Length: 263
Image (cartoon, rainbow, N blue to C red):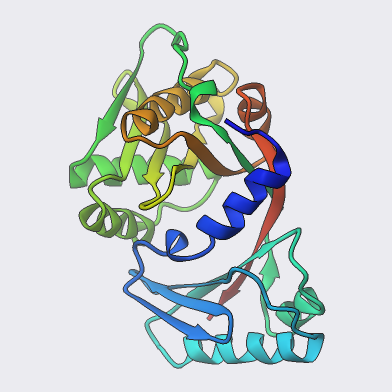
């Protein structure tokens, strides 16, 4: 498996910036090169393969058109515009700020062979891993992830997960538990028609970090990916998870920054 960052970046641009980003959307519309997706619970999302060499004035106009599209739907309460560090996007940062978008944390786009992560990882005593599917378990997992990220518990995010799980039976949700408490969680999202599976949502409670639990949770998802015929893993990683993935052979191919607008 090629671990050349340039080759992996081509896979990312060609295979993971199209329908792969919006499998759970209730609607997707096009504005020029933009894909405007609406998800359950009132979440909007903007992405694209590239901006086709557009100049700053055109980019600014697209930002305004995209925002007006979502403003026209009263059910949409927030919108994420997903940017990538390697894109040619003149004036995009300034246009997003001017339209009320706020930049979030910069994350590393990691890609590499699943086999490098599909290893046996010893767990701390009393910690077990399992896949969850039922509604109550999914809501429990989502609430624990919110707590791990320091966010208020969101029923919207849990509703979105359940909606996507119903539409995509290949998506897998995994948790690590200790004494009946969900202490870490994450999901695996195989991308149809590609060799890639996404490793998403890794979240571990602060008291349980640094003990190999996240690495074990990643390993079990990598083994599942290989069973499904997916040989490449992809993840947008925080600075906490990036070193773990790097040690397992994934490489950073670019960065991504979400810009958020809230009604």
